[in-house]
Length: 231
Image (cartoon, rainbow, N blue to C red; front, top):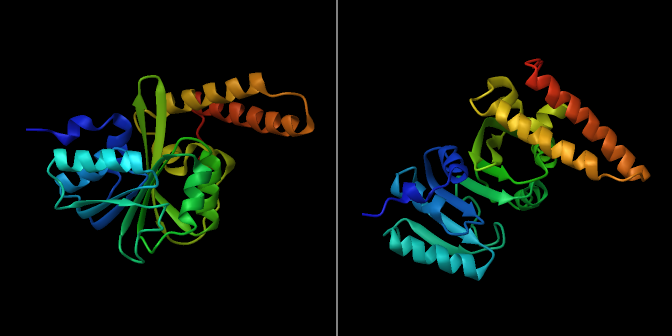
């Protein structure tokens, strides 16, 4: 018997674990559909809409849905973000494997979901800033490692505006507060990214501003790695 759990990478399992019990989940940008299938087979969701903007990945998702005998609970749907999702049709949405700016633009047209599981590949600050400004509360954050790469995901819900510090925007307020097992590995990974950026920035006025910001983050990450976490 096929085991869908074996198809989940650590990143995908992290995303799936952030999903609360739901009536309907819409998985925006489902790709191969593994997370959608997992949520249905494990009973986390009564129904899952596996949505993707591209026909190729959606066709692969449909094949996997059939392969794992999940057609009764998982529906593949061609959709540009929430375009093919009905108002209040889903109570939870997943938007994962995209840049933070892309995720924020998709959220502009969300259709009344209660919970939002978001996994950004880049632009962490941009996405958390968007959530903060637009009245989302981050209620859980997680980190996963795949090979030499580190990933972060979060679960948010509607609430009141909540200002975040620069370090909270970059690393995550709840990661800073709870310091989960992979926290320091994640900070080292983000520090390495900043050091790479610092080596590549030029000398223009724009580059000078970016360099100053990166220098600040570098000092913050080094402070965290010394165990000096002031929140």
